[in-house]
Image (cartoon, rainbow, N blue to C red; front, top):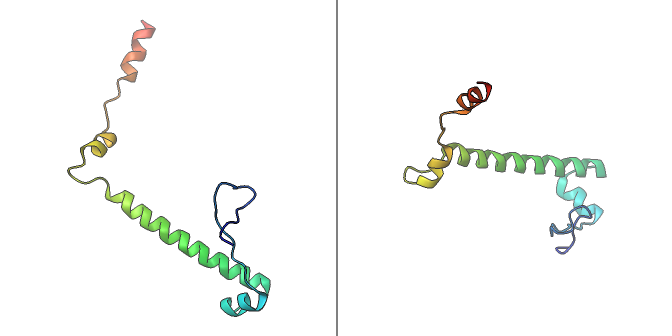
Length: 90
């Protein structure tokens, strides 16, 4: 069911997969509903970890050499906050 959404997330059209019991058991090679749920959870966790690793690799590369706007975003500026605080105490 591609139009279904979770009650807590009505705006996200996540969809719902409907399988018969026999199809689910044979596809996951499990003996019970608990085994099916476990195998689905393991596969989802594996996919999430892979996508997070890919995302992390992209972020760790940083911006390209000619990407001036992004480089300026990561520049560190000298902190002048301590000097300003001293003026108020005088």
